[in-house]
Length: 258
Image (cartoon, rainbow, N blue to C red):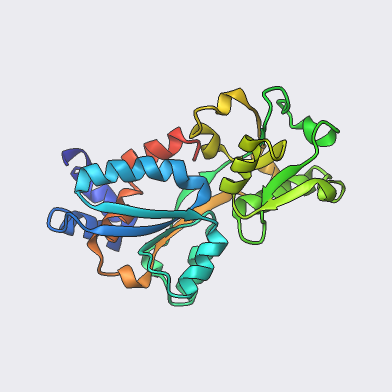
């Protein structure tokens, strides 16, 4: 794979141990399976990345998608994952502190954007003023205690001075994936989701959305880390390193990540 291998120096600088493993073992260790816990907002992006990675290396990516908080709880109970792609940076840091993940592999792989998504094409305006109206009954947000995009949604409502007044209309979902499902099904009229989810949905243009200004909430920086049990797992090391390359980043940009 010449278009990746010629980046040998850049990968070593960016990825440390993981890059060395990618460059040194990729050719010899084809056919292994890497188990990845992936934040729900990154699902569509990861499916495309995984397909590309599998074609390039012969490794297999076995991914599970859900809330970062739920994955943390599972990992502390010994869930058999090799790599965590979280929706925040605090969870990978916490896993490192607790001896469950490798400090040298902790990286920020993407920064996400929050979007207010509407079930109707004419519902959400370009400035999000619908939130101040009576044009909707229910607003879904991911549980801010376990989902970083839910926390960003809560911060946005506070910044707009709407948090207290909105409580009777808020529905809390387990993850942004569930928020999206609720909006698409029509069970709720509005929901705060990730920009990547909209870009990954073919019927999203039939709906309406507002890209939330980044200054209304803390940056949604997303971190990844290898779990300690995967220290000698070539496929996991290879995927970790590949996610930091330009080909992988180009896919992430396509889905709205910076």
